[in-house]
Image 1: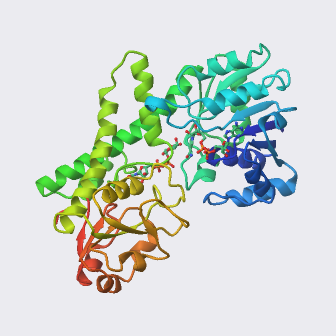
Image 2: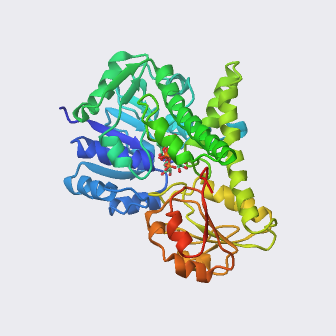
Image 3: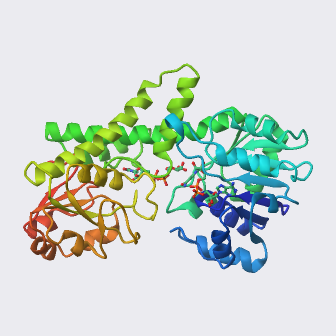
Length: 426
Ligand SMILES: NC(=O)c1ccc[n+]([C@@H]2O[C@H](COP(=O)([O-])OP(=O)(O)OC[C@H]3O[C@@H](n4cnc5c(N)ncnc54)[C@H](O)[C@@H]3O)[C@@H](O)[C@H]2O)c1
Ligand SMILES: O=c1ccn([C@@H]2O[C@H](COP(=O)(O)OP(=O)(O)O[C@H]3O[C@H](CO)[C@@H](O)[C@H](O)[C@H]3O)[C@@H](O)[C@H]2O)c(=O)[nH]1
């Protein structure tokens, strides 16, 4: 494999993982960010996000001289053969993806990109963005390639080094081949296509996953009405290889930094193209319904009114294994509870500091103390090991709402508590 000089712009979940992994594959990588304090920490191998193996890979790359961190995209690209854009594309006005950072970096680097380099869009961006970036760059000698990223938070390094597939799209097939070659060592199935299709694959995949979860959450509601058990139903469905066992767990609704913004963005993309994508709209609506359903269950547990009710929340991150709170369903549920006058105390093993609308405490027992009900919102393994008799003693009420079906109902029952799950037989 040829060693390549690579620049990565943006050192968040995607950029830092991409940079550290490409360095571990032998390439020489310069990562840039606008956040000077973050760059200073990264130069000391201090990684803020909770990602297994990432800090180690960063330290190894720095020590080997293959990984470097600089402030500002313009300072990273000078001798790069390939430039990855790993910039935020948050939900903007009306739900569309906000491309401000991508555009501003394209303008920042256009005059300093070396001749013949390839610019790769790894951010999740609407169809047509590669073409728009090429127009902004206005450099006939620079090709633009789409290489969407599919990593999950909490397993970012593993997902990047052992991907299910690599998608590379460009209207310049030679440039796409050059980008695919960077990852050749991984031996993953690599799908080459045109730029528009590659951009759409990312949204198509995330929206399909969201739809699968909304379906499962709706099925859980139906199970409650019919006296069936969603765990058994999903297990039975999942053995069908066309369906699969993964991504079939009901919860308090799906969230995180990607699924919510990407479903809204694709709805906008479809609408702009003249398609009312009703199925996707229903997927989003069902998710909001699921959060309201959780609130209704808490209301019922405390006897009808949440005004002044003390509620203990276990878990705040959008899923276990991350300290990311972006679009966390736990926070969405907390906000709805607070709007009805509930007094919230919350605990998450990976979240510290202050959050609006709730009192953050240092352990699950403090969250349960005096609570009329306890609500588990993130499936942290440690919650399975709690001292339930002690929690029963500390609580005012007796109901634990387990929105992830994560706890052992018998252990709670033995402690004298009422366990309420999602889609479970009472
Ligand atoms: N987080 C994920 O799990 C994930 C997975 C796949 C794809 N994506 C997509 O990848 C993109 C990046 O997501 P992320 O989660 O890594 O974002 P992030 O918010 O974690 O990181 C973005 C980084 O870009 C930096 N930045 C912003 N403007 C900049 C500029 N002008 N110049 C240089 N740096 C700048 C920020 O300071 C930040 O460090 C998004 O489009 C997202 O949808 C995210
Ligand atoms: O069976 C399941 C699986 C997930 N979730 C929830 O769904 C949300 C998203 O989970 P996950 O997909 O694991 O999180 P992300 O790290 O945001 O990863 C998604 O978003 C990334 C950014 O686009 C993509 O790269 C990944 O492929 C895609 O899985 C979270 O709230 C989870 O709790 C469930 O409720 N039940």
